[in-house]
Image (cartoon, rainbow, N blue to C red; front, side, top):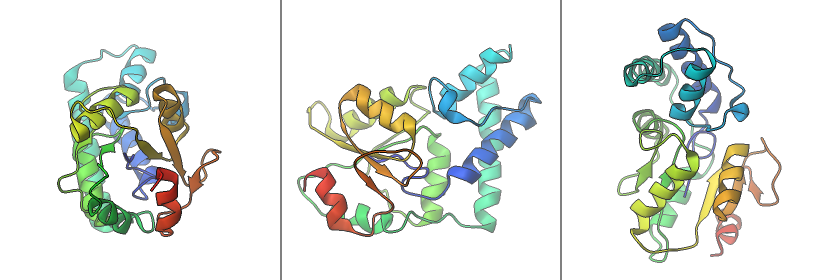
Length: 207
């Protein structure tokens, strides 16, 4: 199971900028982009907390407005500068797809629509891979549970989650699943900078 932003694609920084700009455009308020302080680090969860802290009415319409502006900004950004994959990500996903004993899924705290835009821009083929997102729930843990169910139906299998943030690590601890850190934004015993050394990455999955 993979996170997307900062894990499969190099989109963490510009994604944060576009999100903050969209919130400002719709509400007139500046949002704190220290994401680690939010209870639920997902697009939906962050907005829920932001509305509460600023005494703004939390409506579905407000969420949809911000999402529309955000998607427009993302489209404009990637039209000028396509998204880059984390080195080796597309090839690693392709290799996993060839394995009969592996199920793949994506669980992102971002919105589904923006995830598709960015992955396509980076050239990562996610056809036939189940995905769960902030469209499904405000809680990252619940998003991961949904992604798991979409991948393996009712079966209970062990899984490994690849992520880049402290919130990913915390969610994995809560769920008791194997975690592999991508990048160096937090400290963790199992970590990779990218997916280029495929055998090393597979070893962390137990393959």
